[in-house]
Image (cartoon, rainbow, N blue to C red; front, side, top):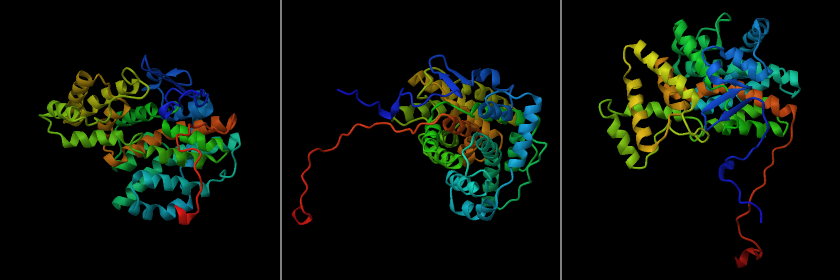
Length: 373
């Protein structure tokens, strides 16, 4: 008798990868063998994207060449430019990004090739364009103008400048850059798996990324960071503990806690907690940080659940001046490095992903003419 299927494919190995690995029991995350604790705060997002897409941390010459490629790749195509305003008027953020990335494929010079060198060029363009797409979408819906990307600034610095309209401090750039590093890849999560399934048909990189964005749009994958912020905004700062206990007693889900893989604290949350505290204190009003800490203590005591990457990311993004409904799009800015790297890896050693299924429907049904049914 065949084994019963595992619901949600839990613990089923769907692919081999050299990109990232998780030790859920120990709470460790690795990018190509590097512990996230060694990379976060030491390695820039550009270095991390190069590591994922090219397989190694770049030296100064390689980083400069990759940086130049990102600068060249930032230019948005004519189709995106012509439609971004109407899309911003009619679609919510993740819908809009799904549409805009699809449109961007039309103007990509490598759109018809899955060759290794073409995929690397497309990966760099997508990584460079995603923050600009988010910023242009936000500017269009708010009727504001944004400065053109400064070739001397990093992806993190340019994004904060374009979203907030002010030049960020060096420390703000460092913190946001670290956020991008922390979110760059995370093994076979739902959106990455969707990208690899699409790529395994030998579809193109843009199509695979659109599949990933569509998957990230779902509230069970993306969106938890936004919901964390909405929850904080809805609570009375003087009654956080009781409000959380009441929610738990009513069997309401507290977003930002627990993880499918980690049995202890998510290692990314360790860094984000510290950044939230620093930014809250620097802002002169650390109320949301203190509320978050109180929530964390209650949920751990009552349910034994640790915060995941989304929980403290919410207040970090808030203190950086990023609008709440752009939190998940910001996730896509970072994860573009990982998604594209997975597409490259899938195309390099491809086999169509086609799992089996267990049939649970009726059998031996007898057909009857329509007038006799």
